[in-house]
Amino acid sequence: MSLQEPAETYVVTDPEQAVVLLNPLRAAILSHMREPVSAAEVGRAMGETPQRINYHLKALDKAGLVRRTGTRQVRNLVEVLYQAIAKTFVLSDTLGFEPETVRRMKEDGSLSHLVQTSDKLKRDALRLLERSEAGETVHSASLAATVKLAGERERQSFVQEYMEAVRLLTEKYGGAKSGDEERPASYQLLVAVYPQIGEE
Image 1 (cartoon, one colour):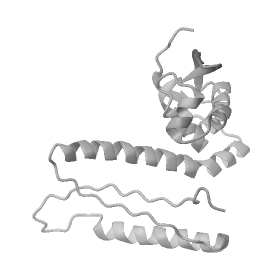
Image 2: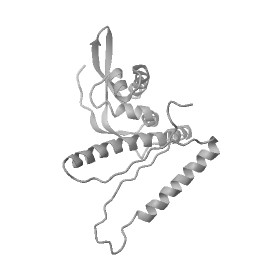
Image 3: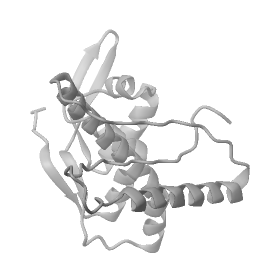
Image 4: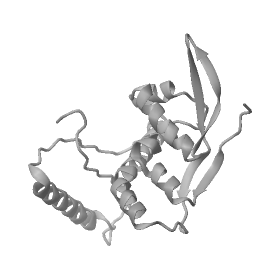
């Protein structure tokens, strides 16, 4: 099977293809597939089992978002190699979604955005690390915490309060003060709330 380079950008125009792409785990899988890889390789990179990755690869293959590029003999197993059809996927503005499709996309949309946000954070952190190693002073801060929320009402209250707190902070510090001597520097702020994995 001939090796075909992935396109730089693929514009998604099919609604069902868009739903497959917006699944957060599948979106993460695609980010590891710019080169031909097996389910086992993707699984190791993501900390997932090959069986789970293979299940989602079949869905991506069926939707036409990845292609099979060949096979490889590993001990007594034959691994199938897959590659994403593009490096970047963009949803077309012309997508005519059915109501059920819209509902499914809304349910998965926040998680998909979380995956995209974490990818951006990793890319930016690597660039800043390079600048720091070159001798530049890079100011940054991070915070991780776990909260226990008793039920849907408390969860909604927490999310609303934390979003309001962030909004007030960004309004307070979002613009340069008049009379400031130093040129203002822009800082990226990323916040996320999601269920803790591995705990009932």
